[in-house]
Image (tube, helix red, strand yellow):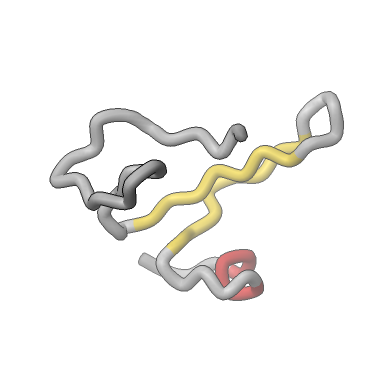
Length: 58
């Protein structure tokens, strides 16, 4: 996976920024891709397959 400029700036070598958009309320939505295995956001266990996409919404 090629590293893009945004991933280099933020020192995220395993991520590639796919798209960025500014929402109506001024927030930015950033879609990233990685070739690293997904981990559970709660316990950190690495999954063998992707069950669903994670959202960065708090």
